[in-house]
Length: 232
Length: 234
Length: 127
Image 1 (cartoon, each protein chain N blue to C red):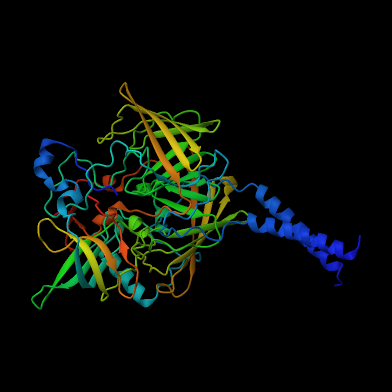
Image 2 (tube, rainbow over the protein chains, first blue to last red):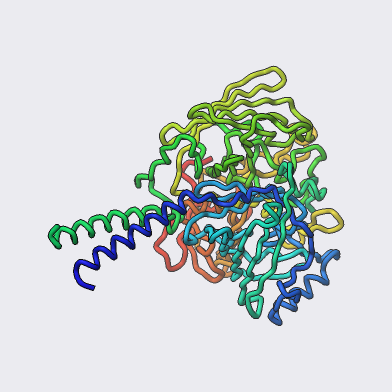
């Protein structure tokens, strides 16, 4: 290019960039406010091709021990103590949630023990206060899919109601997209935890619209009848 | 036009557009919520009076009724909890939001504005609609509807539950307005014919994040055996 | 942080005197004592984080002492971290002792091993 072509090329490129930025700033983002509820509650997560998740041998032993302890005095299900169920288990519960779409963040407001997940609309994670039950989520739109990237999980939660374990190396990426003319929200979640699983794997959660549902202030310990406590 | 002027003009336009592109992308990171010494100036809140989204830290306003009572850790072993007592980790009314030096996170959506108290993750949900739903169930934070009157968010709340889950007959009208770096909430609280006025102030804190605060964690050492808690882990 | 709150009633007042305000009854705020020890456990947990130290009993032996401190949300803003202490670390602390004379207390300041950071979390004179 000679010295007069480069400024023109630069101008054209910058102009095109400015137009596309303006367009994206004014494009309507999909309304994913809900309220939503899991369409088919299921206790055991399977991969998208219907298989059991690829647990590493040590994690498989932990899973077996956890399953054996269910409904015995040694049941160590954190949800019996009303600790946060973690991700994605929280979304698999038969309780509604809605999504408040703000300017700088989205708030997923769950009925289950009035928990929330905040999805910050920024490019990078920040340092956190420590490992978190629901991790730290950042999100952005790719076309009509909301991509939610979450890390900084603690290792105290189960991935599903059956006790599927994970470590604090867990990293999840969700693609959330409307379907069925807006009556469904489909969340395809990639679970990546090299300490627990031989490779990353995916599962799909389908939420259906729960029209008119008012998200209540659920009090888990009261709901389980564990509010009046006798401390031995 | 001489070539050198065209070049400079093109570079100038390109620079302006590039600058516009850079400042319009989302921030690459938020404040990591490190301790501040109070001398670093904070970025002011957005100028749009309806944009109250972000972290607001309650100021010196008195804690709302129902909270701020005796605070202690998990009860020592042997302490019985008498039936009818206020319940472990139950949600409480959060008109002013968090106590204990913690903050509130406001998220402003098109249909709903929510305030998340960092303390115990209690929530207030303000539906941007004209009427309360019929047959609304009494809850600790009631049912709130809101609308804007100019620069003021007017919030009307009913159906606050008492310790037994019954409607305590409380009606609250709040006028919430951003005033500089402060969110000011003038509340008129009427309970069974008696009216009090309270003001809740909170300060714009873009340097803070609102983190998880899991009340039940203090009880996580306790095992649940036969429906009772048995501390066998400590 | 909200802790168990008991309805004011005659029965409760008799049955659970321990439900009075924490800092007023359990710890002596007029005494701030120094101590050194080896970390046995550090729990970053609500409502109070917890530092357990192995300390000298003054007779050539060792006793474990537990010190409570704030919730992660309040500590974080004063520079404390989830990973501030690891088992085996040597740490110097100051603390407010228990009024009942038992070992342990409420942590006031700490100097984690290998750090020049001097952590404190309560303003002086806090009651």
